Length: 422
Image 1 (cartoon, rainbow, N blue to C red):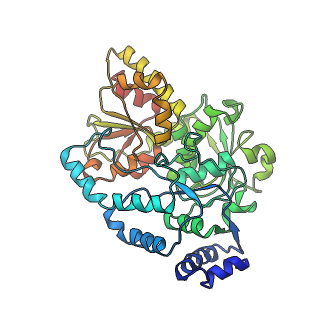
Image 2: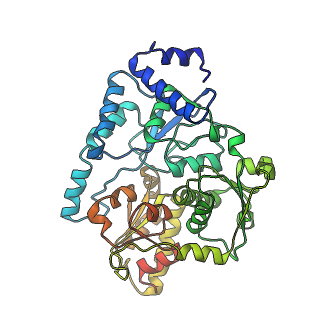
Image 3: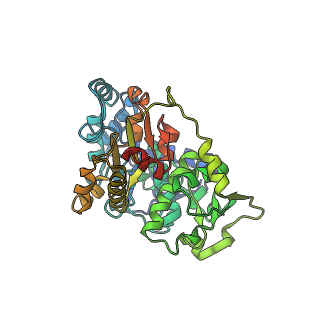
């Protein structure tokens, strides 16, 4: 690998043994993928996927202590994935909370490390760091060192930034060193589409179901999606919100790190079908295919007919417009059902900064009146608790369904269930 003089000096130990190890790790990572050089991390902020102080991950926190002791601190400030516990807003009994305390015994230690490394602020714990209220929105062409799969795919696809799907440790090392190996999505060739997806449904499909279908079909490849421009004329807030959830499903149900949407996403607008590789196979998604994908999901509850005891919405975190829209939807559905409050405990999750802005609107007290709680928790981390895994939890998130025992329902069905409007 060809290194600049500054990078070579770091590798040779001129900034200390610890920084040399950081650079050695990044070089080894690049060599695995045939990278020919390192390129600067050019985004203003970083992001780290590790937000939880799991007791079994003590070696990670010991590594962080060593990095901090040697002054190997990121030049970037950064955002962090959501915290794992919110005892105020998310239901848990005494025994479950005891288990949470045991599981996340290193949480306080880790959050102190994050402060020293340079978190943007206390509101920067979210998987949707790119939302305007959070302030970590990369610009087109900027090189990132991130790992959070739903954020990476959004940054690559909707924002046109450049980032590979890194690991939680490697992303931090890239921010510390200020450079990452150049391969994959950092190269023009790596951003070309391997698949063509033709959307031929009779109406706009549920974003999570459509993303799931694409992710399971193309796996880690890059899809070029045609047909969404029938429903979205421009890359406005309604479109980017849809693509947030679509992308998260492609990344979790497959391993998609980049997609192109014909006539909508930046590179597709500029380059069109020239992005598609020769002989790329075509995948047609129609109503029958969406239904097939939905029906293929296993129900892993012990009692498949159990009444739901908890609902999570917002994985990835909801936008402020989603919170507003859902406040109205829940109100209207409750009015139709004759119920005053949701009939099962329901939690909408969003970024702390988004929640603060939402609380300034008329919709916040209206949503609270329905009995819905709003939290900045990570639903996945909640579901990692072995006692919570046993609960019949429902969700509209395909990411949460994939990584936990939660049962998936499309948004319309979730609304009917939580409001008793069947």
